[in-house]
Each structure stands twice: as structure tokens, then as C-alpha cells.
Length: 289
Figure 1: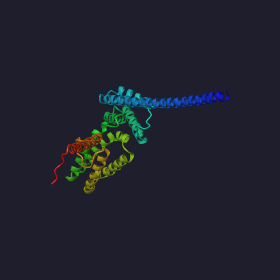
Figure 2: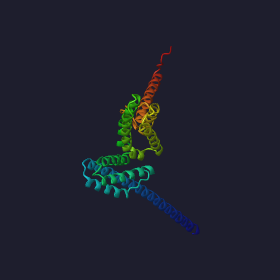
Figure 3: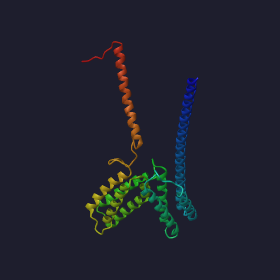
Figure 4: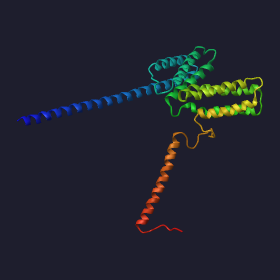
């Protein structure tokens, strides 16, 4: 009788422990699943907010081109309010956030003085448009399309130096390069490392000093242009000797192309091995000289 009681008591204890373990396990799985779902929901919310910011920035740019100042100010207000609800954690660096904020302030200031300078509003709006797009489309941002424009600016500056053209022409060539770079700078700040931007900023500062001098140092200017080409290629993610046009295999597709070629080689070797194995099974051996 006592033995039966002990057995029943033991079974009850084991059953209780198993139930307790299962309950804790279920709770842990549920909590983990809830955490994952919450994290995914947060990511979706941030992505949607950034996409809305991008769309609003595109509208603002169109309003600026149309000289519709009231709509521009309305877009600025909506963008400013939208930024309060966006978490930039994991989206860009502190420097990138600062660049975006500065661009919004620049648009606000340009909208105030628009009657005297509409060009500054359009330029500031273009900066914000590219910056918002860079945040929303990290893989293929619009600012990368400026590579050929900046490259042409460098080529024009190099030609002016080679032909030893007047200081005024050299200064004009540099001013155009600087304007195009400043247009994409906030967008680049969002996606590139701060040191890359700092290097180009320093290069521009030194080059500007050379091009604004009464008698530019042509030899030093030529050397700076060559160095500038290297920095621009680095900024745009281009190889040193890569063409200004879209290459045959570029970016993520290089890895895909490499995997495809490797797969073809492995398949060919595998087929050759299979043919050899079949030949040996049938008593056929390759002829050797």
C-alpha cells in the first residue's frame, strides 16, 4: 500500500514538474515570438515613415521648381513634424542625421528669402530630395547618378589647367564642381563614412585656394585634380580605372556573376567525373599517350 502511494506521489511530482517545465517553455517561446513580432513591427513603422519623408521631399522639390512657395512651406512643416516620429537608429550615422537636419533648415531659410533668390530654394530643395532618397533607398540612391556630372567637372578643370587657361575660367570650372558636390553632400553623408566626406571637403578647400589665386599654381593644381579623381571614385564606389558609364557587372551583381561562373565550373567538373566513372564501369578507359 505504501509502495503504491509512493509511486503515485512520484508520478504526480514528475507530472507537475513536466507541466511546470512545459508552461515555462511555452511562455519563453511566446515572449520571444512577441519580441520578434514587435521588432518587425517597429522596423516596418520606421521604413514607412522614411518612405513618407522621401515622398514629401520629392513633392517639395517639384513645388520649388514650380515656384509654389505656399506648398513648399506646407511640405517643410509636414517633414519637420514627421522627423519627430522617426527613429534613425541603424539607418545612418550621427553625421548623416546632422546633414539631413541642416538641409531642412537650409530649405526653411531659402523659403523665407525666396523673393530675392529663387535659385537658392531650388538648390536647397534638390539637396533635401537627394538626402531623403538616400535614406529611403540605401541600395541605389539617386545621388550616385551624379558620378558622371562630377567626373565631367573634374575633366573640365583638368583641361583648363592643361591648357593654362585664364584664372577666371579655372575659377568658374571649380565653382561648378563645388556646386554639384554640395548638392549631393548631405545624401552622401547619410551613406558614406564621415572620413570619406572629410577627405573630399579638405581637398575642395585646398583646390579652391589654388583656383581663386591671381596666378594659379598649374603644376600643383594638376596634381590636386588627379588626387580629386581618386577621392571621387572612392566616394561613388567606383574602381580606379572604371568607366564613367555603367559597367557590365556592377555592385551586388558581381557576387552573383561569380557564383554563376563557379557553378558552371563545378557542374562541368562533376559531369566529367561522372563520364569517367561510367566509362570505368563499362570497361572503357581513356587513351593515354
